[in-house]
Length: 107
View 1 (spheres, rainbow, N blue to C red):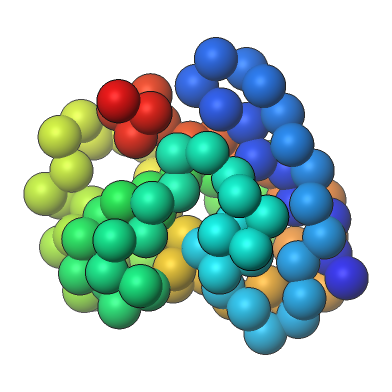
View 2: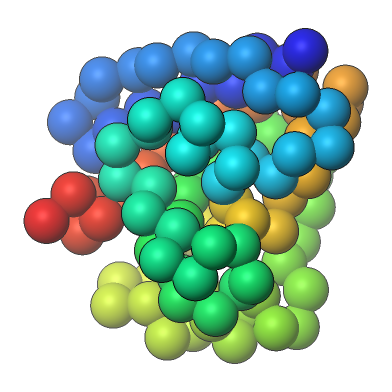
């Protein structure tokens, strides 16, 4: 299983194994990652699972789709490299991925 590291806005890092085929959001929820609320359950309708992809991983992860892009535009603070974790499926290519959860998701 790929190892994914979630870094909180305060710098705390938690590395977890996430099964292939799950979304990053589903994996984060299963492991109790703080700052990933997933209020809509992964339907790309709320933006509470927003993460920032580490610059070294952005090309591998790819760009958001149109619906995801619209949700990201409604976020309170635009962030370079932001994605919704519900829209990223875990594959073997993501082993070692590093993401950060935005500060406003810890309030």
